[in-house]
Image (tube, rainbow, N blue to C red):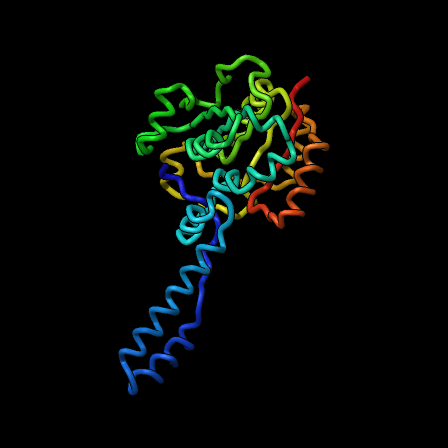
Amino acid sequence: MSRRPVNPSRRYGDAGGGAALFSLSKSHSPPLLSIVLIVLGALLIVAYFHSGSGSGGIRSLVSRVEGDFSCTFEVLRALPILKKAYGGGIHKVLHIGPDSCSVVSNLLKEEETEAWGVEPYDIEDADANCKRLVRNGIMRVADIKFPLPYRPKSFPLVIVSDALDYLSPRYLNKTLPDFARVSADGVVVFTGFPGQRKAKAADVSKYGRAAKLRSSTWWARYFIQTSLEENEVAAKKFSRAAEKSSYNPSCQIFHLRSYR
């Protein structure tokens, strides 16, 4: 998909140190300099790509260099933790959000796991695998500002990432409650931290508005206003599993109960 994840890029190395190395080696052995630079470059690349973890590590790493971060790829990192928190509920999942094909494809690789996805925006630039999932009815392109075409409690677990960040409160008040309607055991919301994502003209063109990242305090008030309750049991299990696995999420993660 064309979306890019949202984190400030990091710099490695010190230009002054590199210049000193170049100056020291240049007058003695140019071939040796080339070998040293190649080895250093390889080490930096290996270290850089190992700084990402989970299924989406490399992809999210590339995106961080470009200055953005996507909570959809954070879902891929969090899948092992979600399995421990929700147990059997992870065997039948609906994922909603941009780049949903990547999440669904990874879920379908798991044993005894059924997964479906809703892509809220166009998939003109999607790869062949994503278009195949659409043809097979596993992926669906749908405007989430309107009710989803599923019966109540159709899925034990609904996971939503990034999609809510592009909705105004007018539509958000209808959309998230509808996600709770189609879930049986709960809804997991992945959303960015305030100031994490840069507003881009491309976002406005594709999503209709720039992403608005809200604070945890804002979300807490919103959940109360829409009668959405925190799934405390799942949240505690997720927290314990994350701590044991040294998993540090790059997005806000909220665990909500389904409507009773």
